[in-house]
Length: 158
Image 1: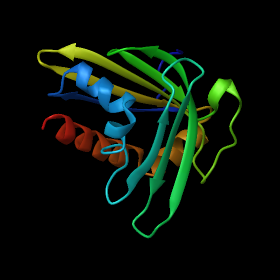
Image 2: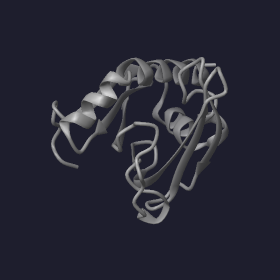
Image 3: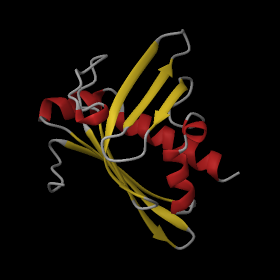
Image 4: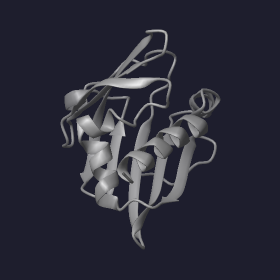
């Protein structure tokens, strides 16, 4: 991955009291991911995971008024309990995607670093342009991804 660019990349980094193995499961087991991935009051109603480079990562999010967003991406890198890289720019088999719902395409680099009994959780959304990063930030990246992480922690701490 290229170096972090504060003009084009958004990052959420936080220590969480959940071990990397549980965080990994939350990101890679569809039945678990559907319980936390979308900030309430939205919910994830469908999920497909083909956990390998070139494999599909698909979620369907549903809003409180019945609106729905169906997003498909592609895994680029998979290192169990450590790193997960996926992009919305590509679909399964590295086939290019067309941006949907006004959301610019981006690549997510999820890094999980063990610390004590928990994890340093770092999610970086990498964008192709400063304008795309601004759109994503203005859509509520920090609040939305932060709320979803809080839901992951609550779920995996039970």
